[in-house]
Length: 120
Image (tube, rainbow, N blue to C red; front, top):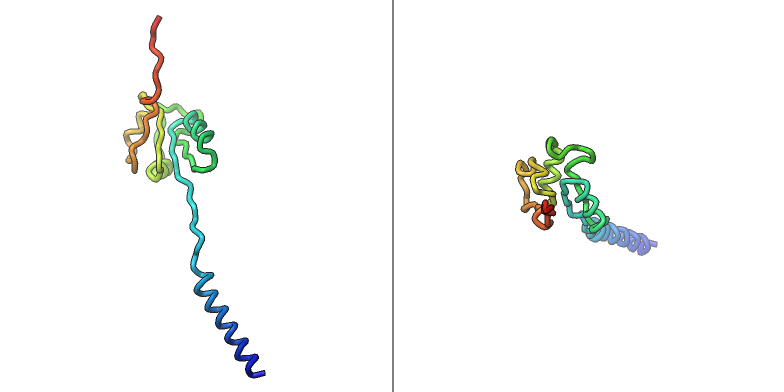
């Protein structure tokens, strides 16, 4: 009976040791989605359809707000500055874009679009 108590105590100590060593180390790596900011709803919609749920998208300009008179809030500025990637329409639509400190250079979509000429 004495041996049984010793074995039981040893097993408890082994399990406590295993609990501390193996189970306490966080082996799961938390995956965070990349943060992508877009200036308008049309860019948001395109980005959402291309990337799906693999990224988190921040729509800078709320739906229905005039982009020429829009004012940035500190909350939106913080999200933009944390963004991995920033897309904006360009061509003078967002005059407030120059006021933002970007971690990486934003992408001006107007440079990749051919505008229609006013030919008669």
